[in-house]
Length: 134
Image (cartoon, rainbow, N blue to C red; front, side):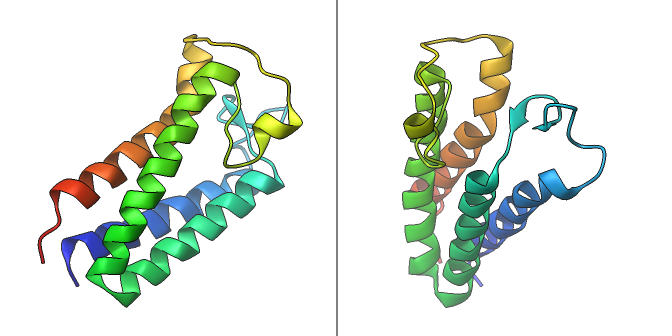
């Protein structure tokens, strides 16, 4: 198993963890926000599970599949996180279609809400571009 396949496997674990946040007692507040920062709904859970399964399949299939996953996933998630600064919602969970834009903001809350997708996306892109060695 190459380093990119191992990274994709790590993404499977992280994304399944993200999908499970709403179902672990004590991690959500009264408004249903995980860690008091972001609200995860069925669309978020479906996105995380689908992404996790994609990561798992890519990791198990081949180095090339893992690299493709990291590049595409990285671009999509990084873009989603950056887009969240401009609207308050992402496009991957269809939030921009179900909510009115809240406008550009760099408040601590907005940064913390978008940081997971920015970090996941940036690391995936970096790995896919810089660690492409077998």
